[in-house]
Structure formats: structure tokens, C-alpha cells
Image (tube, rainbow, N blue to C red):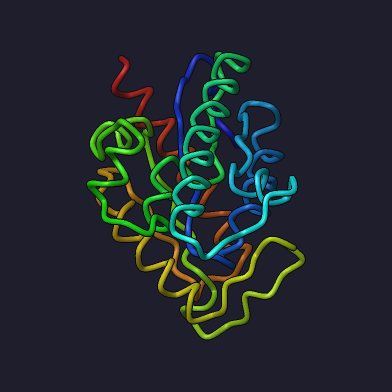
Length: 202
């Protein structure tokens, strides 16, 4: 039975390597919480499915990642303003772009006019779905904008884990888990986060 989450204002990231099942899981988690969670769509998907082509050019990559970073934060702010008393569940977070950035981390944060600490602090918890490629499974899907090979997916997964695992409330779901177990873990983790918040608020 789901607990009462009225007036709990939380922002949670559900992220992971390509082919981890996070986007489908987010939709199922949203349905399970029946209107008490507002979801933020993946900014990169919105951009690349809207007519922008992927590129290997470093300058283009930097421009694209800057746009994705800003859109991500604006989408989060829109959902927070619209659903004032809901948990905000984000399909990726503002730090995901660091794994795709062609330069170093200092250059990324300078370009975005922010810091690693500030971006981590935007989120109360991080749930990480490890890429299926890490357990030798195919990551092919119906997502038309996914172009990573299994090898590239593993590299990206490792980069993303290295970034997000520095969050104090980081929850890793290994790729060997079944998809149903991943979804149930996500639901249980969110309930635990809410429970801890309510204890701390007493």
C-alpha cells in the first residue's frame, strides 16, 4: 500500500546507461503512484526526435549538450511549478550531459555556469538502471534516436555511474535484474525516500 505523499516536495533522477529500461520504468512508476508523481521527459529525446541530427563534430556536440542541459532544467522547473506538491521524477538529470561532453569536466561546468556540487544538490536521490549491455544483452529497441553499440553503451554507463554515484542517495539497479524487478525496486526506493523525508520532517 502506498503511503500518503501529500506535500512531499522531492526531485528524483532515474538515469542509467543506454538500454537500461528507464523510460518505460518511469511510465510504470508514474502509473503506480496514480497522479502523485509528475514526470520530466528526457530532454535529449525531445531535441533529437524534433529534427536535430546527431553529430560527431565537437563544437556541434557542445552546442547540443548546452541546449539539452538548459532544456532539462527548464522542464524540471516547469513541472515543479505545475505540480507543486508532487514528487518530480526526472528521465535523466542535468549531470547526464557531462558523460557526453567532448571536453573535460571543468570546461563543461564553466560552459553551463554551474558546479558539480550545485547540480548534485538539485536532486534528492538518484536511481540508476545499469545498461543491459553490461550483462551481454542486446540494447536494440524501438527508440529511433538510440544509435549506441553495446560497446559504446557500456562506456557511457561507466561514465554515468562514475558521475551519479557521488550523490549521497545513489541507488544502483544492476543489469542482471529482470525488468519487473527493476520497476519494483524503483517503486520501493521512492517509498523509502518518502518515508525518510517524513521522519526527518517530524
